[in-house]
Length: 412
Image (cartoon, rainbow, N blue to C red; front, side, top):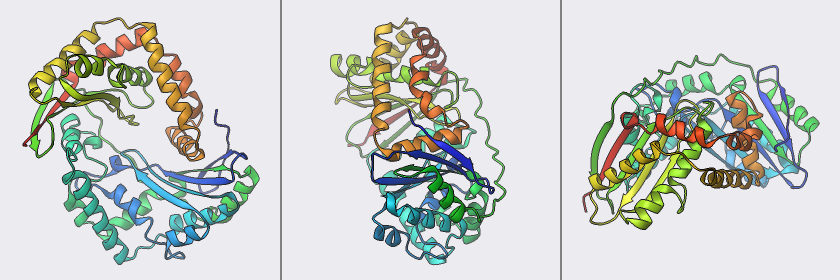
């Protein structure tokens, strides 16, 4: 259970306070309700580029990292299709430094052309290293547009293509900042060895004067129901042939989200899962085989991926996976098997909340979803899932016509 208090500043900044006086540290986490899904198809990669630009200095702070390091703090950030999240961990007695740093770049980010050029180069190099020069790195550049035809989940967070980052202008950057990096589009969680009154005073002092803005209206195309199976084949110099399959499923707030999550665990979480036991351990057709969900806010994907054993063709591997899926769709699941994956999932939740930082990030995300109490209902929502729910979602999600399959062939 994550206990918290909350308040909202006049400018719309939503603040949550999680007190934990067993630690000497504090966390300041700011989640902006903007991700790569908010981009337009002709200008992608901006949410991620902005994550980098936010560390390039602001009006009153030339070197963000240097100022933070002097106070004994560390920071990082990440971008997803749904959100952009920034966090600082710092000794609690220096927490005001975190307020100073985060408020200054929310209010007055440096629009220095040199910073844009430096960060543009960093992102382009990251694009090349992670997506082009790494085995299987371009999988999601191919799989997303195969699975999605309308929704903006169809491009990766880093962008659809490098040219969009290469061609980004300072006007583009300013427009993005003033459309999304607003106090009324942010959720701030302060956690650790702090008090509610302390956070109220510091929030008003450092963030209270930042004016609210007008958030760009979100207009994301709805992905139509997939009516027929999709297939694509690609090849590269990778060690082994690989199989990737996706199935459309409900979003994070869907009534069937937790049932589908647990279904993916039954399919491919760990060595006791259906896919691993049958096709890795027994038949030895795959060297690895997993199933998981993307946990998207909007309708997302259940994914199966695996590396084929030498001598096994992609078609043979795909047929074996499809045959197992077809049998699962007709099966009645046992309470014993369901209890096992529920316990695994709940253990992951409990372990994840050991760190104050994780608690802060999870609380911010739940608040962004519309109800901060979601953070305390995850285990309860999983325990409510019945074997009948699993059977039902298996029939609706794991349909052949709902699938997209990518054969990734080794050229070696």
